[in-house]
Image (cartoon, rainbow, N blue to C red; front, side, top):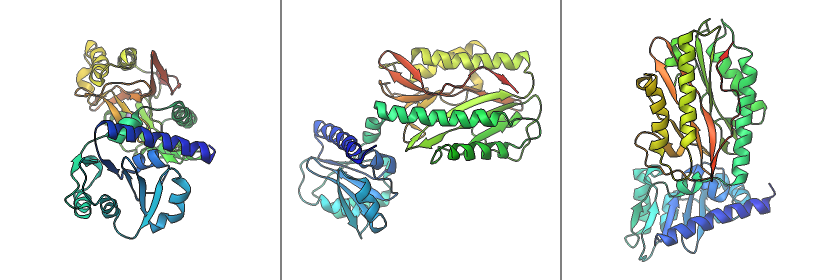
Length: 365
Ligand SMILES: [Mn+2]
């Protein structure tokens, strides 16, 4: 992307955020969460505090990032500080302010909160508000969706290649390493999270770490992987069976696949996250499998692998067009194994689009 148009994107995001804080009659916002800072300024460093007021947009960073911050963050004022960054941001606000200033409680340590208050003095009233930038980030534009489509493709290519290596005797660890290596060679800046390869009884652990365990015949194997491409994540899960699957395993697989389809069928703008979750859970209940579905149906995806909205039993998220979510029902049966199927879905005005295209039918290898 040419620097000029990239700077425009960041300027548009900052002005959208400014409109929000002005509409909420707030005097400013401080955010240091790297994915938020990147989203608003383009700065990819690990140490940055972003301050937005009706008048100013300032990125505070330290001397390690002197060159990088000025190259990347073209739409904001960059200040290279020798004091702590939250202290610098607090100082910039010193004086009397009628309106409160927002900070994010989920990304601000107690020590940082103290620095803000000390540096700003009593004239500033600090207000904890969760998810202001995350809310904005959750709705993706077409350029973001295009990158996420590529990130999805990349994970699919890596998995398709590695599925050819699956056979009795191969270690889970080796398969996970092959997946991550291949994603990297295809242009990913890294894995979105540690790749899961879980076989046999280990597939009953939803977040199993790959081990030295060797794949055996007549086992289910769960692969859960994602790539980071230009700052955006993909998240893909497929479950395969080594050898011919029993009628029981096929039935389970069918139920999980239909649970995913049921969730997708009601996913649209305006529906709430809990209803999407209930659709998947309801389908599994019909097969008596709901008690084996021990996690939520899905989550927002973007610069982070878990974002809003949440598609969970107690979710209060209301789905909006442009959000990208995973749909990943699964069942986990202790001592036997597990099945999970996960795709990355864009919510459109009138329907959904799957960024992941890989075959969803049960693969018997
Ligand atoms: Mn996921």
